[in-house]
Image (cartoon, rainbow, N blue to C red; front, side, top):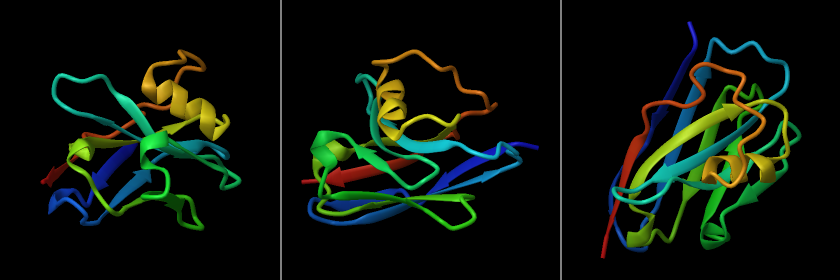
Length: 135
């Protein structure tokens, strides 16, 4: 059974840090790209960070220098280390697994700037984890 489960969200004050984790199970594809996107109430979905199978990463401009995406050696767990959090980072964060594409392309797809390729997995993302940053 395919599962995607995010965890690690919470409430912090501005300037604080959180570490999000995502566990994928049941996927059997040999190569894939993974990423995080977020959605705040009343706002469009936006890609935050992505990493390809070789470990090349891409980031949304506003999180560069503050967020770091990584994956474990078995590539079963995706991590998003977030520091110096700002109130505008408040959103539900989702992790996604896609086919073998450049991380920059997955970032565009997650932001809705690109429509292809379609996600080859089901589900592609989990139910999300809430991040709330207060000023």
